[in-house]
Length: 89
Ligand SMILES: [Zn+2]
Image 1 (cartoon, rainbow, N blue to C red):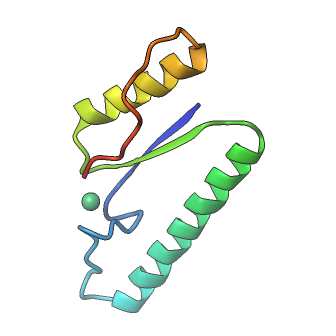
Image 2: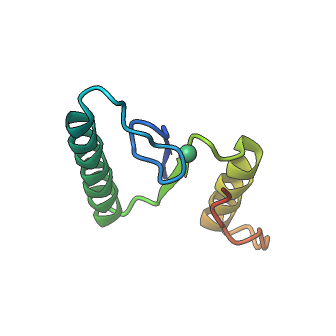
Image 3: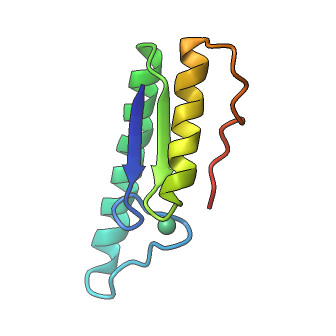
């Protein structure tokens, strides 16, 4: 399993990313490239059989931990029925 906690600025969170006023075009392009790389990284890992979980920096860490634990339990096949992973906002 690969777990990423994406920073709201560096990964372009739709809720929180605000491009700096100085060099705004540079930053928009930079963040767009970061997002493309995130998608590529996830796709490569998933094609190699990894489970990829991505969360935002702004998400409640307790909810994130519950989701991760649920995925781990399912992967271990312990028969428990953890809550379906849903990304909290
Ligand atoms: Zn955010």
